[in-house]
Image 1 (cartoon, rainbow, N blue to C red):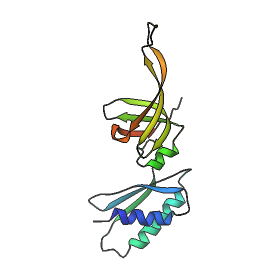
Image 2: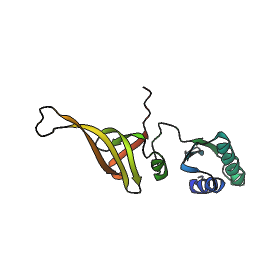
Image 3: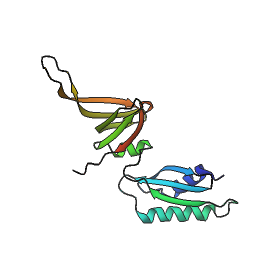
Length: 155
């Protein structure tokens, strides 16, 4: 079986000195390897090609054949690492909690423990008959979150 950790290490070695980082590496039973990259700015096609060449050249001596795909973590993909969350601070995200609640909010902060979101929610306000929109700022631990994605509004 192909070693994902070895592939990630080779890719990270190739990316030293850039703002590009490895998000994930997956190996299928048929030895198809998918390596996802992201960046604090943008991932260039040339970067993906360079990483692909470097990994293939280094792994060419291994006994096992494999197919390597190096790609950018696309828009709408689930965020997988803390650096992706930090990159989106101040931007809108869509969060699905484990209890089934879906929240569209502004990502205020992110760290190793979780995320802080701000959003408007209708709540009962004392002295008012109808529920009023109230700004809510709430922290969620990663253990409470099923997924988080960047939210794009095309209106």
